[in-house]
Image 1 (cartoon, rainbow, N blue to C red):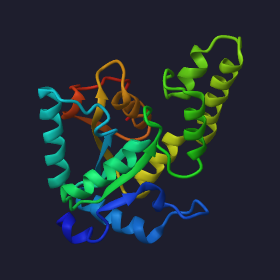
Image 2 (cartoon, rainbow, N blue to C red; image 1 turned 180 degrees about the vertical axis):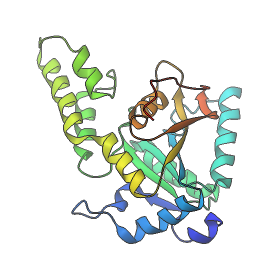
Image 3 (tube, rainbow, N blue to C red; image 1 turned 45 degrees about the vertical axis):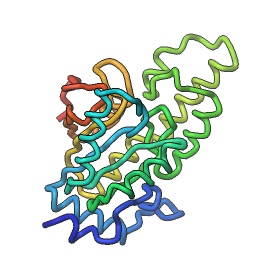
Image 4 (cartoon, rainbow, N blue to C red; image 1 turned 30 degrees about the horizontal axis):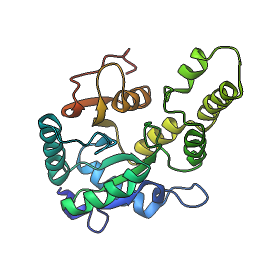
Length: 232
């Protein structure tokens, strides 16, 4: 089954539109996306912060051309994580590419891979107000690394970590994927290496809940694989 046949009229989707105001699933839109996921045997792609590292270099140009070709030709539903001003830029850019598979744009803070779909929008406001970009996105890591309180900022960081635990944005995102029929994710994007970056952060967020494969040629500056204890 061709994605062009089952996805007519739903090329670009705001991830928040998958839910109604009462945080209930938008059944009609979800069913359209679910049909495309089913045609790909339950596989979807997640691309993290496309265009975030955009620069004039041979390495980036090679990666970026591969990414554009992938988005234009894939049958997968693609979840594009994008935040800040890049969110609208990514939407316009993808619209111009002429894609035919659904592209679901999921909001995040501009420099952290924290997916926001419903109530966790408060996380973005808190993150941006406190300039939390120096912290790991993972709430457990934040709490483990913070020392006993020594300042207002330290109290705020602890509060941020606790709110992440309360809102559980990764659990919400992966539950959404599973509700759409996704059983495996193929992952790419920026910034990517084995030790830091939003691709690694996204892998760590998804991996406890759903199997994830890296697409090495769709990562920048590049990563072949990530090795974490197997949860499956």
